[in-house]
Image (cartoon, rainbow, N blue to C red; front, side, top):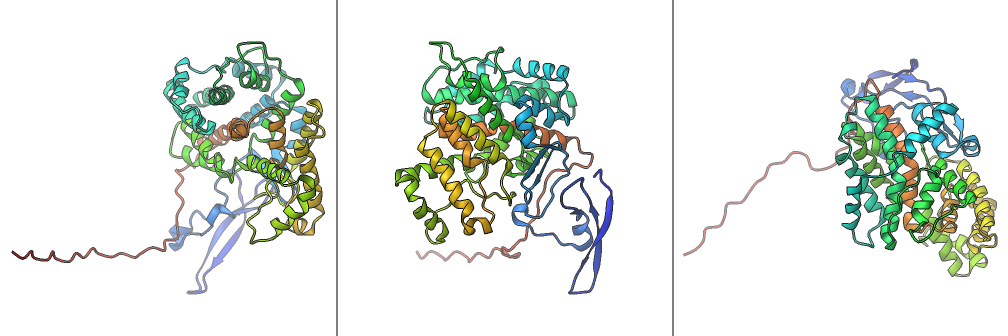
Length: 441
């Protein structure tokens, strides 16, 4: 741990009057942490923290969230500034290296990513092994994990250059694999990447282009997709990032670790939230639209109804998710560009947001809109099907996972993750078998 102890915390036991001191460390911002690494050795006891609600599992310099303020910082820069002044590859460089690139560094980084976007031609065979109706995330998990079989030259995790090469390859090839998973699901031929296009424009070309005619990416939609990627690039120690770190702590190769993160992100409570939000809006629209919002809100407040308000509230944010405001702006731009300003789903979303923010039931519980509330609407307007939403999320988060994994590998006191438990099962017991009954003859 690089920080020094600022003061001590004392833990006292009421059963025998004993006590033990632990050092307390201060970060550059955010809550202090109590270092309890010696707790078990000194007392024979563990802490109990299901869901890691109050546990700092690592030290990190990458991303900081202040949930009460509604603040998100990448390497110290507010997300509001990054989303306006940077593109996605700027953001990737920042998360990986700690600083925004100079013009020379930017040119070199963009070139390396752009010229690593093709995947090994033999990997095309993987896609043919899946059913056409396979979920794209199933394909993505398999293909990313399989990349380790093709790139033996960069699997030494103790070698910083190998780690950097793997980072470039993962960032560069994820759009190609995401687009190929989509093309396979709709029965269209895959499109090779184009080095003349930007990162986000290239993804749109590979997803929506066909060999029949040239595809011209729309600049407004390209900027919208780029912003989606930026806003999802990293988010501190969430479930998938913690999974990547835990897998990495075993010494697993980076492709296996990222595949583990993708698998975790697949869960509906994590990466599937924007899809669930869009499905909620579609259901309200089918049942009567804006006029039925009041009835829907009443059901949400009724604990016995089982109806949930998706896209509101967050495990960390207890204020307005800063990404949601940026996504709302992008949503208006996209719908305006596509002539969908009167889109009933967007109008419904705006009215639902207004009513919820004026209702003390939600305000008192700090249930503000999060980034998922608008990102699903934006992606649907762009022609991205709901089955691909989590794949886009995984693509965006890949750089955050890599940055966190790389940081963990470089820690001098890094150990394999080994959570402990509060055991409540049977105590030791012996097997007692009854002698077999004699068979009468």
